Image 1: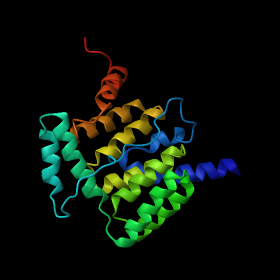
Image 2: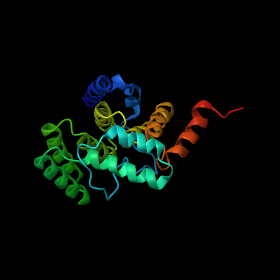
Image 3: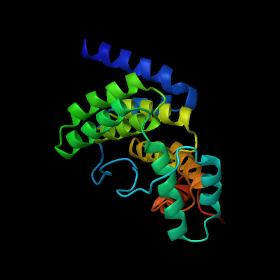
Length: 212
């Protein structure tokens, strides 16, 4: 019975994730996380600036690529996160705040249920998907985390946090090629991401070999 349930769950997730080429990793997605794993997927900084809801994300992404130094890039990055985090309704805002409180109290299952409600209420609110992906990742539920990351990227393919998180999961389940691809996509959007260039360098040597 347990084998049949696992097969059905994997088949269902494979159908969902196959459109973005993630299905082959699902065979390994439920294995225990290796030692030294990251605590969570990339998230917004603690302090965010106030931003205009009508601010053009295309302009900000252009500014992010053209940022002359790390300090300038971090400023632009924070403005992008601030726009992503703007809640579409007072109810969604309240639920997101309660989810954060639950996470702070280490009540992860409660937080996930609250995020379920946000997603049901406003399925186009990408940060609800992104936060839930983080919580599933913390529970080592890589299949569900990948499914939520896919939903983020469907709505915002430039979400560098989700792309970096995708790379982390692919690396942990042993799919170095897809991890490298995800990291490269994240850096193409945000060249100033911390630690990701080192991961790209390491994986490039591992996947593609050293230059002769």
